[in-house]
Amino acid sequence: FFASLSTECPERERPAHVMILFTPLCGAHSEAPLCYLLELDDFKLLLDCGWEDSFDTDHFDLLKHVAEDVDAVLISHPDMAHLGGLPYAVAQLGLKAPIYATLPVHKMGEMFLYDAERHKSSREDFRTFTLDDIDLAFEQFVQLKYFQRFRLEGKGRGIVITAFPAGHMVGSAMWRISKETDEILYAVDYHHRKERILPSLDLSAFSKPTVTITDAFNASRPPVRQNRDARLLDTIMSTLRADGSVLIPCDTAGRIFELLMLLDERWRQHNIVSYRVAVLSNVAHRAVEFARGMLEWMNENVHRRFDHSRYHPLTFDHFLFLHSMEELDKLRAERRPMVVLATPPSLNTGFSLEIFSKWASQEKNAIIFVEQGPEGSVARMVVEEYTKKQRQREESGMDAGPAIITVDISRKVPIEGDELEEWEERERQRRGGGGGAASPKLDTLPLAGCHKFSGWVQ
Image (cartoon, rainbow, N blue to C red):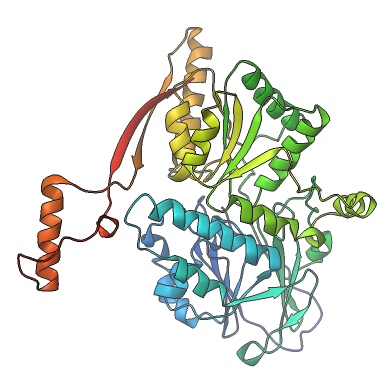
């Protein structure tokens, strides 16, 4: 992300001079998650607090010096890139400020973090933050509606914050921050087009702000083709008809709903019953249930359709919502082609990585990336390797062979043998017990394991 400032100096005299200072803590001149510090005089606003699902604490080298001094936090989107660092910042860095967001960002943000924590803690000894830390962080949330002018109190007296629709995800917001005659617009990852359920951004937010903080993340990418949805559906259906299955790595509770709407339309229009569609995440069912309650945050077409037929667009009768690999394995036992939307989109861990390791080496299957993976992620590596092989084929006119991808897959498994005896001895010494101390039960033993997979993608 690139954070840019555009400043306009009004000719009229200002009743008071406001000192504005903007400091990127992360997410400037890089693709790193967003975290910015905006100071209005002596009032400190944190704009987003993102983190990648690798959860490297070095990411907070700058935030840790200012977290305790932050007076308020504004969150724009519910995904990891915008709020993933909140549990750690609250539990470990002393962030105690109120956190302002819309209702969907609050609820869906919890789903994103619950899913991410479960992916890590179920596969490794993950202690960077816990489910309790997530709950603690979200207790500090203050929910606001779109266009609600909220006046801060105390040290922030005179500052007004307003959320405007940003598109992109349900409840996503651009923030207008006003003090005296100065207006600062914080607008990142907004989407100008109305989609199946999402409204477009609200242009009234761009009414000649004094300062604009925005991003140019997609500026260097080629424009999106207009037939993108048709090409996606054609790829899915051709794979299924060839007896292959499709994996789509996706997010937990953000862009996934637009993707599900696209698939639902196709399955309904053509009455498809031969091919299963499954959503696999740790919070799959809860995320959809929450989304169904967010009707007022969707666009007017959704409202009219619901008012006319009383049919909720997020019903998804054709789809299955799963929470474990065991549930997916039972479906796979039917030996029917299927589409699986699995988290996380980065392929760094979790269900999507496990499925990728099993399906990628089978030429009849397809792995479809509907968003660009974070820099350094397995998803980005897969796409780059595939693109390189495609370029080699075009330049040489010969088959360059499959792309070889090597990934590490961590699983928790009970320790045994000499390793178990060593652990039991350490536990006896730690507890001060003698040699006759009873062995701990199996469910209290430490679990660890790692499996390397080398697969090919063609």
